[in-house]
Length: 586
Ligand code: ADA
Image (cartoon, rainbow, N blue to C red; front, side, top):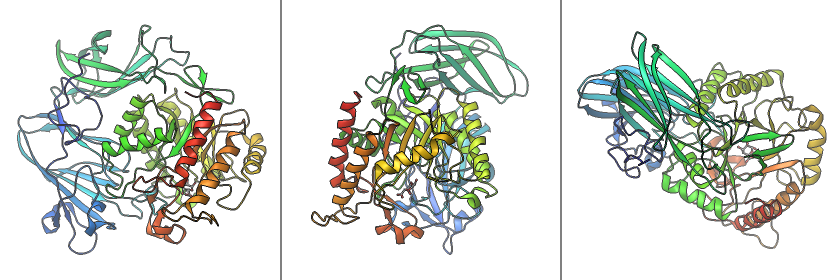
C-alpha cells in the first residue's frame, strides 16, 4: 500500500498523534501551532472567560509550562487559547493525545468537552462546526486536591500543559470511523484473526453504509448495505486466514490495516491502523509469544526529562530506546500510566515488549476511597485499551501499582478493574505490581504475578532469601502456578557521587554493586520469568518527597535525568546480555 503522505504538516515540526498517517481520505492536520497560554496574575486560579486578565505566555504544544523557568514549579490553572479558521462548515473532531492533567474545552465560549488524566487520549466532537473564525479555549489544571484521585503528590511529578499532540479532523459525513481493533486468534498465528470496527453516527436515524477492509493494498473484506444506528456501532468481522509475517521482537513486521466507509456508494471516511500478527499467552508458569516462551528484561520508564517535563519529543523517545538497546533490554514498563502513543509506535517498530499500565501509584485505602478514584481508574482503563489495543508490543495490561492490595476494599477495586480490562481485551494477560509482601490478598486475581522487591536497598535482605521467602508465602495465596515477574528492584545512585573505596549507599558504585547482586540472584530463581529494573532514568518528584529523595529526584536511574550513564549502566547491560545468552533470548 502506498502509505499516504502525512497530513498537511511535518510530523516532527508539527506533531500528530501517531508515527504514521491515520487517514488518506479524511483531511486532518496537526493543531499544535498558534496557542497562547494565559496565567492568573494573582494566585493560581483563572476562569476561562477571564483569559484576557491573564498574563499571556508562550508555552509549547505539545509541552508543559514547567519548561519555562518562571513556571518551573507552578501548580495551578491556565487558559490555552487558539484562534483558527474553518474553510467550510461541517462536522469536525478535535483529538487530544493528552492534557496534563485536567481540562475543560470551550469553542466560541461554549463548553464542548472535558477530560481528566494527563495520560490518555480523548476526542471532542464538533458536530456542526460553522465555516469562519473560531476561538478555542482549553482550561488546564495541574492542581492537587479533590479534583484528582490519581494525580497526587507522588514519587514522580505532575506537570501542567497540553502535553501531547492535538489534531483537527474534518469529516466528510456525519458517520465516521472511530476505532479499528485487530484481534489475532488466541489459537495461533494460522487461525483467522478478527477485526472490530467501531463506527460513530451523528445522524438521528438508521443509515445504510458499505465498508471495505484492506491489509496494505489487498482487500480482505467487503460489507454492503449495513444499517448504522445513531451513536456507537461495533461491527465484528472474521477474516479469512491471512498470509502475514508474524510480529516478533526479532522481526517486528507491521502492516497497515485500513477501513473505508461508503455512504450512497461514495467513500466518505477512512481509518488506518498499524498492526502486528502475534499471539501472547500464559502457559502454566510461562509467558509465551507466538507459541514460544519469552522472558522480558528491561526497565521501568517514566515520561520525564528536564527539558520537556512529561512532553518528550519523538527524537528523545528514540534516544531512550537506543539506550534500552545498548542496555540489552528487550522490554519496558510504562510506569505508572499509559504512554504517549508515538512511544508505543516506536516499540512496535523496534520490537520492544511493553508492559503498559493504568495510572496509579501507591494509593492506600483512604486514597482509593476518594470519591472519584474508581471512576477515574475506569475511564483511564477504557481509554488506554481502546486507543492502544493494536500495539503488538504491548504484552500485558497492568493496573494499580502498589495500591492497597491487602484490604477487602482494595481487592474489590482490583477485581472490578481486571474484569473491565478483560472485557475490553480478552487477548492479553493482566497483572498488577504488588509490594504488600506479608498481606497481599489479591494474588489469585491476575494472570501474571508481579512483585516490587527492593532487597539490599530498603533494608538489607539477601535477594535470594527475599524472593524465595515471598514465593513460599504467596504461592498458596495465588502466586503458585502462574508466571512471576519482578516488576521493580533497584537502588539509588546520585549522579556524580562516586565512592570507589567505601562504596556507600547513594554512590554510583554501590548502586552498580546492588544491581549486579539482585539481577544475578533473581535471574537464578526459575520461578522468575521477567525482570524490570527500577528505573531507566532519574526523574523529578514532588517537593513533598524531598526529604527521602536527594535533589528532589528519584535517583534510581541507570542514567541521570539527562540520560548520562552512571556506573550501573554497564553493569546492567552486561547482566542483561548474560541473561539473554543463557536463556537464548534473541
Ligand atoms: C515503588 C514505586 C516506584 C518508586 C519506587 C522507589 O516501588 O512503585 O514508583 O517509588 O518504589 O523508588 O522507591
